[in-house]
Image (tube, rainbow, N blue to C red; front, side, top):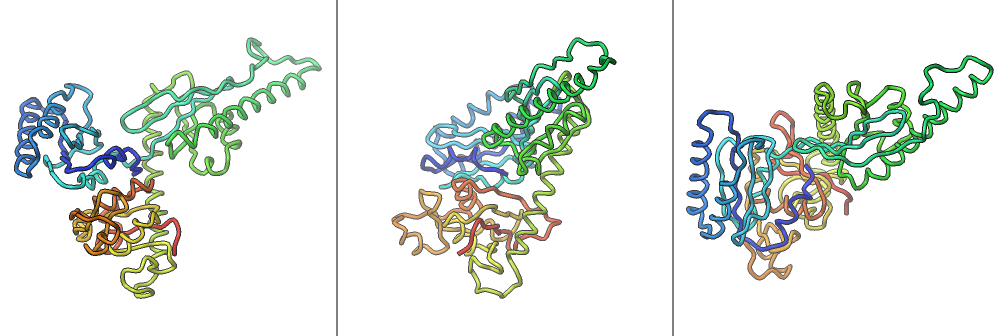
Length: 382
C-alpha cells in the first residue's frame, strides 16, 4: 500500500480522532444500524477524552453519508474540530472503532484499505488510444494518444495491382508510427500517473506493437487484456474482471518478491548483533529497534506488518515530526523533543514510512513474516 494520501495527517498536531466504521447498506434496517454505529462512535470518542468540537465534526460527516454508492466502510481522521481525511475502505471493519491518541491510529488501514495496485488502461486501435486511470473506487480519463492518419481508411479492399506492395507497406508503416506515438505517450505519463500496472486493450496485433515499443521498466509491469476494445471502452464486464484479476496477480507477485528480498536480506539468525539494522546481508531489518533505526534514517523501502504481531502494538516514544521516534525516552529527548509522547509502534512507523514515500505491506497470517510482526526491506544499508 502506498501511503502518500496520508501526508495531510502529518502537517498538523494532534491529538487525533480516528474512526473506522462499516457503511454498507445491504440490509432492510441499514438506516437504523447506521444510527447505532454513529452512537457507538460518539460514545467511544467521549470515553477516550476527545473534545466536543472534534466529536461533532466527525458525527456531522457521518450523518451526511449518501444513501447509495457507498463503499464497504470509511475511515475518518479528525483534529481541531475538523475532519482532515475521509477515506473509503475496500473492506468493512468488523466492529466500530473510534480512538483518540497523540498520533492518528492509521495502522488498521493496512488491512482495510485497497491494497491492489492502481492501473493505467490503454484502449488501443489503429488510429490511437484512449487512456484511463483505475483503482477500486474510481475510473477517470487520462488523455489520448492520436496516431498517424491511416491513408487506407475508406478503402473497401486492398488493391490487387502492381502497387499493392507499396500500399501494404504504407499501411504497415502508419500502424507502426501510431504504435510509436502511443508507447511514447504512455512512457511520458507513466511516472506521474501513480499507476503500478499497465493494461493494454484492443486488437492483438495493435496491442503487441505497442507492448514491444514500451521502455523495459514499463514493459515489465504490462499485461494485455483479451476482452474489450477502444470502441466498447470501460463498459465491458469481462474486461473489468480481467483487469481485476491482473491487479490481484500483480499484488500477489509483488508480495512474494518483497518477502523473498526480506528473507534474503535478513540472513541467518545471529549473524549480527541484536537490534542491528544489518541483520544478515544488510537489506532487511527485523524487530522494533532495527526497524526504528532504519525508519529514522529513511532507509525503509517497504514496511512489513503482520496482524496481531506483539511488536506492532508495542509503545514507542514519538515527537511532532515523522523522524521523531525512539525506543528509549532519552533517545528522543536527545533529538531535541522536550515532551515526547508514547505511541503505538505501527502508527509511528507508518507515519515515518509515509513521510519517506515508502510503502506498507500487510503480511498474511499464512505467510512466514518478520518475528514479532515488524520488519522492513531497506533502500540502502550502512
